Length: 107
Length: 120
Image 1 (cartoon, rainbow over the protein chains, first blue to last red):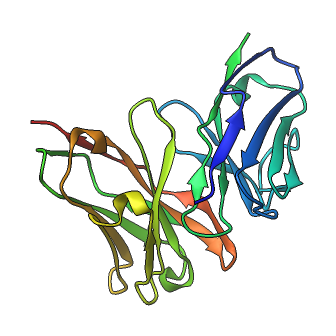
Image 2 (image 1 turned 120 degrees about the vertical axis):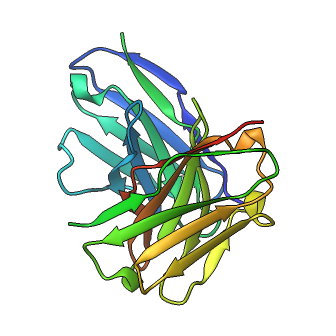
């Protein structure tokens, strides 16, 4: 099975900061990676798929990059609405798996 | 619009089974696979498995292989996830989530979630 590891687990940042979250796969997943945002008590929301393609309606400050085993989610200028938990997930083969999550907190 | 509406919260005793439903609307039911994902309180997302509603083919995470059954009913556009031999560790919110198409098995539309509480 493919293991997904996110870093950091928690990230403290301020409004306006540029932040990057990393996701590493235990083996190559090409570009078959998605990123989700989840706020407390809410349903996860798809942000990015195929490593770098933004879902419709997602603000342009969110971007994804990477291929193979290392991927990043970047928020170019943090907004108050962005403080949430972010998950990566591969979907190259079963079983699909998620990273453990990165909680983005207000500094 | 695409919608997945799940059944209501459940409280079960250890050893029991639970069956969660997920009614789809706004798209052709048989054209898209559906993932099932769960989230224990304060924990991350956990992929449980996937079903092809057209022919009922499934793939399950090894962890659940022996006690999960995912099914679909084309007549009502409803998916079901049944989990047996429940323990307290199965207390979680269970989500159904529709994929985006072939080779696009990420979850683009999610149900609202169903809280399953396992307690004696």
